[in-house]
Amino acid sequence: MSLSYNSIEPNVIDDEMLQKAIEEQRPEDIVKLAESEGIDFRDVTELQLSFRNILQIDNLWQFESLTKLQLDNNVIEKIEALESLVHLVWLDLSFNNIEVIEGLDTLVKLQDLSLYNNRISKIEHMDTLQELQIFSIGKNNLTALEDVVYLRRFKKLRTLNLTGNPFCEEEQYVLFVVAHIPDLVYLDFKLVSDTTRELAVSKYQYLIDPLELEEAQALAQLEEKLAKQKELEYHKRAFVEYLNGSFLFDSLYAEDTEAAKLAYLPGVDDLLQAYRKDFVSVCENLFNYGLKEYEKREAEVSEFYEGLHEALTANQREGRKIILDFENKIKERLDEIHHATSYNIAESKRVEYNEDILQLSETLMTLEMQTVDQLEELIKDFEKNIAAIASTFMENVKGMMAQCRDLENRHHEKLLEISINTLEKSIKNELDEDLPDDIRGLLGDKTTLVNTVNTSHNVHLLKIDMRECDILSNTYRWQASVTGKAFQNEIDRNRSRVKEIFQYIDNLQEQLDNNLQEQLENIELLEPPE
Image 1 (spheres, rainbow, N blue to C red):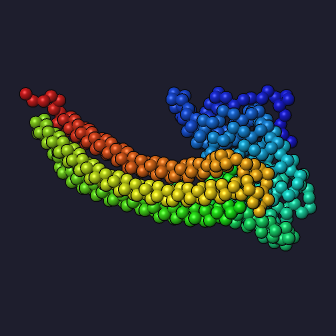
Image 2 (image 1 turned 120 degrees about the vertical axis):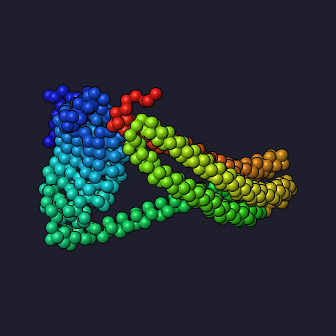
Image 3 (image 1 turned 135 degrees about the vertical axis):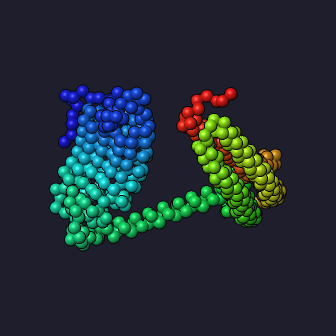
């Protein structure tokens, strides 16, 4: 079926092979240019490495712009080293010795894939190829017709070649494939007729219905998962993720083995439920407040950039007007130079032109400095507003987290009281409840019991402090990032604009020099007068 390299000396993909392949597929004039300047593999979009006895795919990481790759008619045994070819659209691996479909995960743009004439026995590991339109896997070792069901996930697949596989000998092969891939247009190089499609649906509807139901359920689950991820990302941007429920409260007790023991004491369960209810209520208040503050922050940022855009648009409009007026005026200067009949006249006009250019440069730079001042004021106001928003948010966060600490402190006091009372009853043998042995062990010594309650309390306070610290740190980082970005964007814009002005002035100067030289040659004045 495929090639053997027992009698063939296998090759490796090295720079020499790649260089030669590129030269062979390029026009002669480009080859000459490449020989003088060198070939940059990063610019190559198509690469043909057919019939080269290649055993192992390697050394292709530099071809980051590659869209078409031919590796057919070699002795390749494994699909590998293609992960950097993320722009690949067309891949031919036909006539090789490949046994497993793998190594294609990053090729998410792939539309045309040929694995024809290999040793593959299962269709698998292609989930990310959602752009696949043409797939050829004929003349392999596919024996289970059910493998075709895997291809239903490729909603854009229109052309499929399976011919030459063992399962093609089955009587209902064509109808099974067409039924399970309903949008297929071509199968084994033949157009799928409406009659075939109707027969396929009629025969296999009993298999398709449960499949479609299963796929619909899977899609609904995926959409739900993505929606939850999107919602979580929104909560993270607001710095209040996992505060809309009992997550923080549950985390206080997640690793607190001592608290689990204390929960057996009489009255602690009711105390804990009341504490939980009040704690979660504070967390939800913080969560809702955080979302509102996030929207306020986003609105402030949006309003700032709208104002920035308006200021820059006005600046650009004024700049274009200044340049347009200058260019209308300068046409007259160039015409005067063009019609000058002596060196003195041409030189006089050149001086006037230079003065106009200098005046233009000063006008444009003055406008830019005015813009810089205007934007600096906008950014300073923005920085002040952001600082006020962040400060208010952080103060309120501290207040709500203080409420959580107060609840924990009150709970601790009541828990300590219950624990000591239970200890005293235990000493007097007045306990009605039958407690586990490890719990009774806590009641044997007051110091041990108090230390246990205090340890649990300290763990809870630490976790509350850590969550508060996370929120405050994220807010500080956001404040620094959003204001820093505004300042840096303005620095970059100013540098770019100044460079643009200088370049424009240089072009005008060059235009003047060229016109003056041309006119001097026309009037044949090679030397200035005395």
